[in-house]
Image (cartoon, rainbow, N blue to C red; front, side, top):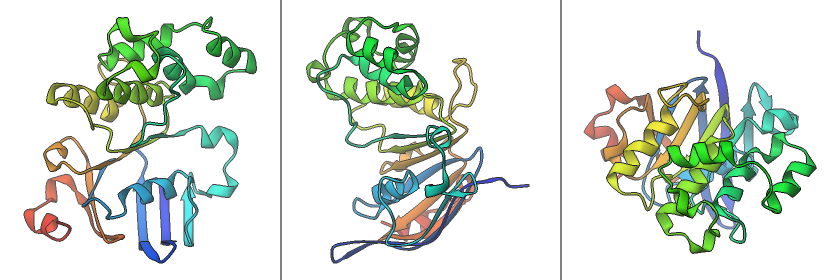
Length: 245
């Protein structure tokens, strides 16, 4: 029996005079690993922002854990994590401090202060940074000193350390070379895998590269704010992709 963890009902989102999402209906079951594909400007990023509550739809209903977004308590909201396309790192903090920020929600004020003062423990942060192939030489460097690929992996480590129930990711493989993409994709999609970390149960990743679709369970295609298909990865054919590209 399917266990619906995310649901969108008749979602519309209008920004000024532009209709960005147009009658989106979507059900995501617990445990699914889903790729969201479509051209730039198709509505992928907006859909992720609606799912995580960053923006409210103009019309329609968002349900997570069988509750509306407004009904979620703090503990439930902490189970949803996003890897943002613009990363949203804190430039004046070090790489390890930024990763540690991923667990601030479950810590107290004193931990947050210690993290800011650089006297908290970074043992767990370093583990996730190592998994993301970040060299120890950059752990204490400020974000502004890092390359684009290093910043990308810091943001990913910050999200993974939270061990969310739901992970939403908007183009998380930008600035990464093919070898790193393979490593990071395995980290994002695995569930209690070989790395012995508690990974997200349910994952939705916005992509523009179709060569990265392997290992996903399902593929959702979006064009002009409308979902044109939502199918098993094994059933994806060229004619499906022709609809959105």
